[in-house]
Amino acid sequence: MVKRQDIYQDIIKSVSAKEKLLAVLIDPDKFLVENTRAFIKKVNASIATHVFVGGSTVDDFITDKLVAEIKKHTGLPIVLFPGDITQITGKADAILFLSLLSGRNPDYLIGKHVKAISKLDKTELQVISTGYILIESGKKTAVQRVTKTNPIPRNEVQKIINTAKAGQLLGMKLIYLEAGSGAENALSGEIIKSVKNELNIPLIVGGGIRSKAQLEEAYKAGADLVVIGTAFEDDDLFFEDLKMIN
Image 1 (cartoon, rainbow, N blue to C red):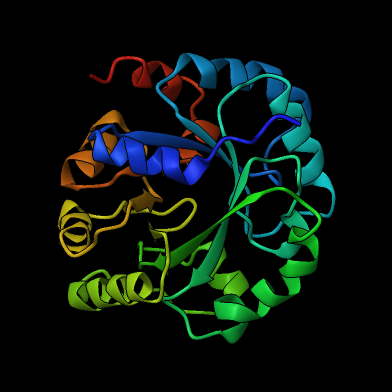
Image 2: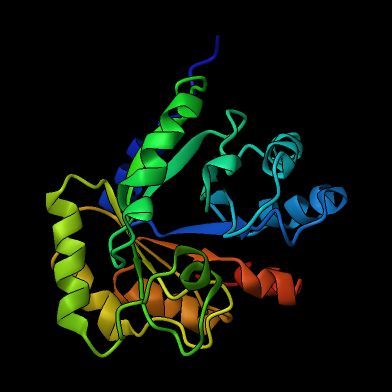
């Protein structure tokens, strides 16, 4: 049996080498499986380093089918970014085991994680504990609706910092700052920099990034891995921009 790639250690190595990472997020609920080959061909030709798969609300079995199809067309790591345990499939390489630290709904802090164990035990997925922090973005996001939690206001920077540091002290391996899918406003450089300066674990940033300039700003502020999804859904030509980043 071929040993699976250690996704987390690869991220650590990249951060140590000051290499910036980019994940293309594919939402199974918004993506047609028959478009996979053409889409992944563009992903492979871009600077993307990871493929994330997941969404807030996804029908049963769709994720499994989509991941299997993606696997046929790329050697990039496929990481689950699940909104629910129904999105767990052993066909991926790893899973972000997300705990919604910004909310106070026990189901998304620990409840769904307990329910997920019976499914995870049947896979060889690398499980990466991730502190997930939702930050106000100018509109009510799908994450907010599904989890029934409120995001942290973007002007409460110290609260965002404290939440991230609490996650690190709890043993999280990654911190994920999220503005939410389709966010009107991407996270500011100030927020990203302020959080990054207080962490010694990798920082993921996602939500609202729709241009090369915004991507570069996130990297400059300290994001180790940036996640982009909606921009590709709305504008397939965005891949062309990503070929030109230095």
